[in-house]
Image (cartoon, rainbow, N blue to C red; front, side):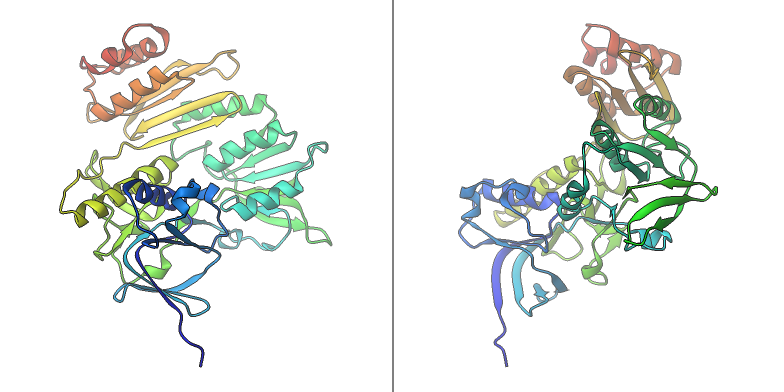
Length: 419
């Protein structure tokens, strides 16, 4: 009978989400003894992915290309496919999200070639192998989310003919207002990207080589396609812990220090559902900014508990941003309530610059700005954080114009006086 292999670590970071690298970096920053920390991942990741230097890696065990098939939180043990047991004193779950597959969306022929999801490094590498810059190939991007938004711009710049198709009434429907979306849809159209809204992709056609040739739509049309990219969103990878940890809103429920209902287990990044202190509710956030900050908070909380210290609870201001073509936008806060747009959002303008505020219960709760400079982006962040009262939506729109058209002290204009 083969001898059972077992390893013991003080800390284990389990997963290949970007938050795993940030947590490892924070552990290294706070000081580690050799062999205290292990990163266990099924990805063949490298120090570049984790953002760690050679000095950091000397203290950290990288256990990569290792699939964990069972987690027993009562005995603080993880079991791999080859029977190896990894024991820990404290574990941080950083498994991230897996993409929604085409088979889950009702598609047939989901094993066809030239379908990409862009959720892991292998998929990105495989897509790169298909790229032929000298040949104008047709790409259909299914989905109007952030990945679809960004990859469509990137492919267009690289001489691809791109069509976006999604069931929502406008692009980035989960975040943008209709007025914001109209600008980007117009701008993308001017760049040659075809956008088909309020339409669902329902199937694929393939050739004798198993390659995608068409994407079928629910209105009867068929789009030619050399490559299909699916931006179907993600699903937190929490199945190993089901029944052992309290879950909420699709993630592992944590407190303001990212500790789960099991005291030795923390969760960060995409998989964590945490108290959003600013709004008094529980939320789950998928963004690199939260990945970094949640990782930092969890490690600081672990070290503080060991040393008998206390730290402040997590107080996160939601943040999203993107760059596409020569555009750049930032959003802070909550996109609920009534939206008020200001500035020039004409997609044909040579230097369009505009923003939006969201107002709920008489207060500004969210702010968006396209084309802002550093000072202006800091100003809208502060507005979203301080939530100034609003006397008039018309005045609020005028204040927005001041933000992007004046050299006055923008922070003072926006938050020192009640709007």
